[in-house]
Figure 1 (spheres, rainbow, N blue to C red):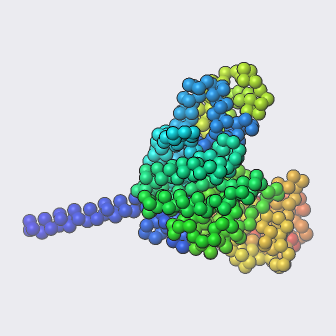
Figure 2 (cartoon, rainbow, N blue to C red; figure 1 turned 30 degrees about the vertical axis):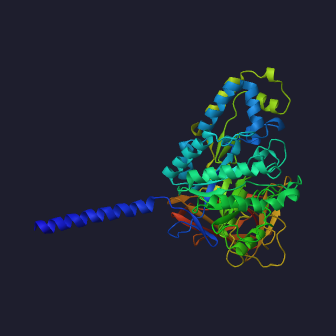
Figure 3 (tube, rainbow, N blue to C red; figure 1 turned 90 degrees about the horizontal axis):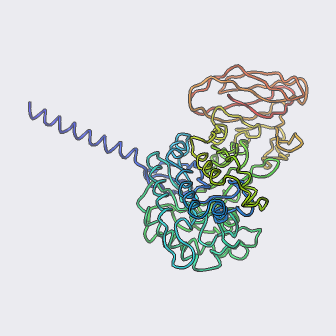
Length: 545
């Protein structure tokens, strides 16, 4: 009997140990790798990176401060702060700014909202001194250490982004270029420093699985300045040099590399640079009227290189573009990172912080339109900024998050029907004539209908239909409203929500809001179909809330 009890206790202990290790294995973060066109974890599970960029933190950007030319990049913003506060107080301001702009509260919230990764934008000057006798700067590494620690806690991957390389890779404000020249490509010393910095980063994080990838160089060599024409042939050799140096000490982490001209010209990528690399473009759809940029060249390269494609930045626009962009990317197995997490006085980011009272004086000084000695209470203004940037003092915009993740409550613009093609996401009779706006390679008729070209609508005739997709994070019952107008009379449309049909008459040739009875949505994915049963109609949007 005692022997039986001991055996039972031994088996029980063994079971507990097995369960413990299994749970540890399940909850521990895994290194990410590329497998053909997917990013996968160590078990082979596909991971689609859905992230957010931590801009304006370690590399402040003038447009996020509402500054003009004299404050368009970090070194010039720093000069303005020093002008206003003096060197000692300015140094203290920056310590507090960087300790406050992104905190554990931000990372926790990013995870709660459904993102699985962050992309911190690094300025080399925060990690390595300029000039002669270059030395590493501890503050930058400590900030990155802290970020990685928080991300481990909340299970977010980190893509380390070299946003501002030594000397500057663009010759513009976005990389803190000192002389408006791409001096990274003009002085071999700067490339030596960049290699030195990346090796240091790799040595520090080579065994850290929460780091998903090294983003070797942000948006190098724009075309319109002539930088690309002069230096683009140096880009791949530089990537190869950095990869070789990092691989000497780090065999595990992915790389992500960007084309020239704001990451978007991929002509130089004719063969894989490394067998664990994802290729990156940026997707800013700034056309007016709205337009989803063509991604054909990236899909072709995805096949050629047999490697994952990733959008490292998109945003700075409207919810219609956000919804359409993530829907398009995910249809083609492309992960994404929204830019940025928060900025001053905006409504098109997840969070916004208020400009301090008196900020207009500082902004005017950055434009040369205000004298320094006329600024009143500068120290108070900058102290208020330090309070305003705290997440607890920021304004949250759930509509931005709901558009990005296409989740209820959400407004779906009519032009953002699915991407599964003819007979699956849409049916129209005329498949020859293409749209004049937005999705110009497809035959669904999208048109611009207001004077400032900010609104678009879809025209449908009898028997034509569109399908829209969204998801719900909870079980709920909520309203559904369709904005439409009749193009001919009589017009009848059928709205199907998860297979439940409702017929509606569209009796006005002016815009009207048609409301359905409250609809039930289960947790998960949902489909909405709009079919024209009689007449013809113009659709503006579907609002589910």
